[in-house]
Image 1 (cartoon, one colour):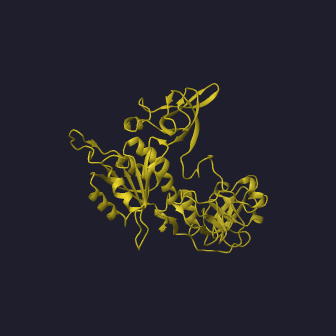
Image 2 (cartoon, rainbow, N blue to C red):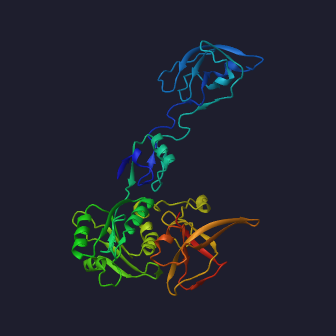
Image 3 (cartoon, one colour):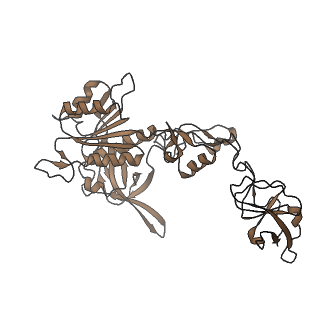
Length: 420
């Protein structure tokens, strides 16, 4: 997708950007002052001032190009083109600021305060690589190169749906058996934070026909569908009932806690386009959040184009052999995954055997005479219970417990995925 620079911030380039012209395109002044012929001013000082006539006044943006002959100067502003014949600029601070005659009290160095054409980049130079994230400085680089629009990976449109007849809109009156829908708000905010465009549908009842019709309607306008709830083995697991017969979405247990039941696949393709990706997450809020961080967020980052640019290993530069590198062993690419740190456990907890645990934790930093220490403790007294959404609000990380560890003791080191 090609977008104007105004709409490019934060997106990822899909092609290299090259300069259209030299940058800067002409010799210009780096200071407000006077364009001069340096040989006219050799020996100028406060004790030996030199006075010369001013023959032109050049503002930034002017197209004028008066030829300076020996013994003459032109007043010039920052960014204005250097006139033919001039070879240096005297800053205004070294003059009496005259407009018809100017007295100069310091001789300039060779080419002083002259920005040369092409000093930043030459026409045809690559200024940005495909895979670069267009932060403000890179948007500026593209503009400086003479580019008004760029080819980018578009932000995916992500429909977010909560399933469950017990769910009501937050703020609505509830009867016995009903709870507010928090998942659609949680997951929509997470989609936006990852760089996607959330389309929050909200809650739908446990009705196969209603869900099937909704998904069919969304399929042609959405890139990704994220559902929560209805993926386990209960009698009313409507998501599984609707999607599994399609043959394009797989369901099964994952060896993690929370977040054991999962589904992933695509809505069936049409002649016009492939169907949207589908992530079917558990319905409990903590399970949904952990599942999003582990599975959905990296996929959205890949769709956005992150992690597609090769980063050169400096050890190979001499051999001109680019090598893919990662910051964290075991993660595919740091542009896709959250940053991890090693922290020290403060409060102990248990982990289920045979499943990797993602414990919502509070990460803090303590400084003493030995330095700064990163520490973690569970965000909720209830541990990693999948329903503990209030405790989840306190968490700023997920401690990752290997599946063969069942007890985490105070003082143990542990890997933590930082989520904020």
